[in-house]
Length: 212
Image 1 (cartoon, rainbow, N blue to C red):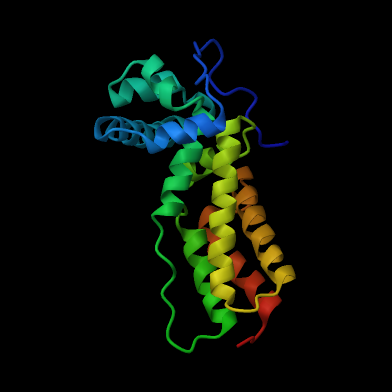
Image 2: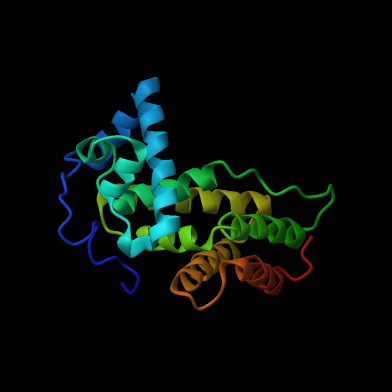
């Protein structure tokens, strides 16, 4: 896969695997104490800042841990790799994203276009971080795969809601693919992240025309 990172950490970086399967890791997340949840939040925020300043290739879990004020071994207790950290950054951003506001009586095309603009813009103001997160999302670790499935499921649900009752499955799948393709192209540098919203809006207009 073209954008897949060659390694989960920098060359020579000491890695301690998370050591748990995806289900066990997710179960542990649900049992976090308030202190642990705050520690995870600090790691995620530190990962975002480290990616902004160093980019994907130079970012390491060790540096993220140092910025968050914890030992690398502690960071690896919660995150198996830098891909896992950055996938979590992207997931949390999507999870916090409110649905697109649309006027009453908006057509299907208008609803979908508005939703795609919101989805396209939520990382456009942070292109270096967005590129790092896009690369990380292509990782093959089980934790990254779980977050990728969660991200795709949430995206699919948002687009289905925008299409409304009786959504055409072929159109829905095309919109899913258009979004994924636009983000991938932006991550590869073929288009700018700030151009993604209009690119997606144009795709929606072509697929939906003036549908009510």
